[in-house]
Image (cartoon, rainbow, N blue to C red; front, side, top):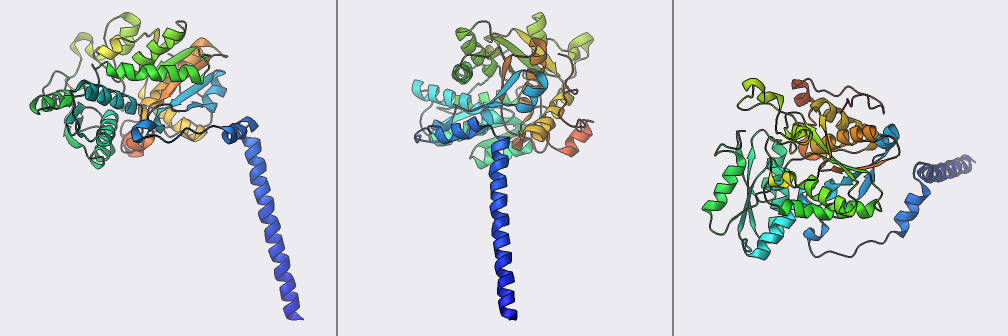
Length: 395
């Protein structure tokens, strides 16, 4: 009798467990349907997947355009981010590295097994190292020693030779760009990528502009981007304005950069330069890969209509905001771009569509931009909460 009762109880428990599991599964399906528009799941099921590509290089570009829900809801505009962090090398710089290597191989400047060099704060170096490996070439990267250490580690893991140098003026022979240029000059058959002045950078982003046009069906009002070399904003602005000259192109410029004044007043100028106050090696910004104090050939070719300033505080708060509200873990230049997109949205007013670039992810910024200890040193610990955008100031 006891055994029968025990078996009956066990059977009831098993049935209850199965019912609970089924209920939970139904709940998960129901909540998924409630949280995700039906058009999303339908489009995923019906989506035509692309065919296989010949190598990792075939996976570069054609990145998704992501609606940033929190920023869109708070501004009344559609704010869309070009997800360049989904490139195989993890950043927008994959496009530039591929174009530079393709053009130098096609011209005969670079031969298989040859050396390509560059001076960079990190992302371009990572992309060049990946592309170089894919085509059987070698890579040398000179970078400032105050760049996030994980970038140097990643470069070394990709097989690049890495030299870290103290930050100095671009006119100094020990500046990473000059060291990389000299290494190429001293090595037979080597090529200096020259991302700042090489217009292959701009040409790579003509494609980015065309992708944005196709993904928005031509229905966009503004494009917002910072400038590290100027290639992204130059190529995309040219590409978009060739299709619709009325699209507004807005520069998002971090503190310490001179480009805001170049756009607004026609001269490269920051307050550091006033009355001889400019320091030999000023602390400009905690962001990396964005902002300039000189005019490059790429930026000179950009068709920019307006500019907004972005402070370190705004960039740090935006990075925390996007992770908290949208699950987007982004690098510093992407955070600068998103602050710029909000400022552009406010200037245009509700009902407009603004596209920006999500340049890279946050994983290569862990020791600085996403380090609580590092941010605390500069009194930049994020403090904002919720979904409000009060931390974004005036343009």
